[in-house]
Image (cartoon, rainbow, N blue to C red; front, side, top):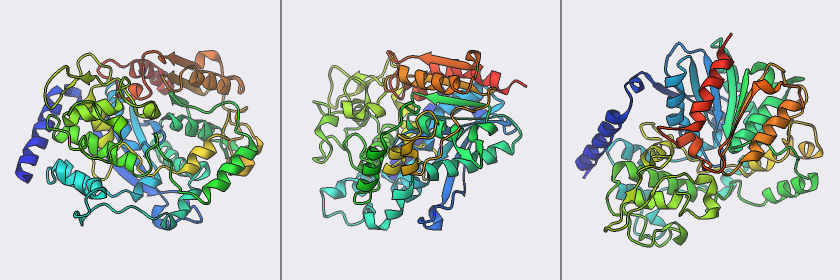
Length: 461
């Protein structure tokens, strides 16, 4: 079976290489972890932040540092990062791998990527054991009392980690832009306006990039902030994503996306599993690819998963198992699967299995980067919203989840610091692009098309 699996993986790689443009051979992807912020309650081994680097030229000095959104992680940005550096070869794209991902167990996923574990073996290890006690060797969940320190992994910890990434990027000697998707947009606002010894984080930046995310101009009420903080002390440190508790949302996504690449046309493993939520299952028995597409396409995915959706295609009209039809959709489903499975990357995927609730709570106090009572409650220091450098350039793309609110927030951020209008690029695609299409659409992508000239202006000296 392992030999057969290796052939399948080899065939998928062959197809991917055949379909990729010739320039893709010059794209280099690497990963490293560096020392992060010394969070007082955290064991030292978790005070680390990862950098997933995508470059078209090893000599590119300009860096776009991207922050993933809620329950997302670094490999989410690899495909779009490749698109960017092919068109702007003097730029690198760096994706931040947050510290919570150090808690993930990728042992069987790594074997599957190498063709040494079958989809069934992967499913048994990560999921089926929950309903089949005969499976003795399986994934181990982490007891809450073992990770109580993660209740402190909020905006202060995240911004201090990000600051270390930016400092590494600055050493290359080029321009540095910071951006993010979804919650990563709030992190971007926080970093730009953060008080680093009396100086705004944006003082070291040339640009900000908001991808269907940002901070609401109005901060959360301080009493509500305190209640959220109090409730957190007696609950799990981790966010529940779309009604699915951690780490199951991440395991569903990583296992499902990987099956799209290793066994796309085989009968879905998860469809008959009793613990897979019914609203994720097609009405007919699907292939692995169809199961994954149905669960995350904008037309069939449950509304609670809007933050995970893209325009991926639809079920075929007939056939058993039912296949997935992907002609004409914005996002190729296999590209989406590469993003979330971390295909070709060891111990990395595009989903954060454990997303800290504290980070989401704290994002409500960032607002437009101005001091407010909630910031005092939550140890947030985004206070330079009125004195960002006037030379700063800002790009914002609004899709289905953030929409015009993303553009409004970016505009307010610029106006309150007197940044001229001509230094803003605002792109509204909320009626045609889902929350994830800006990062996943291909070969035509309005986000990439409008971002490239923006980056070229940023890097122009």
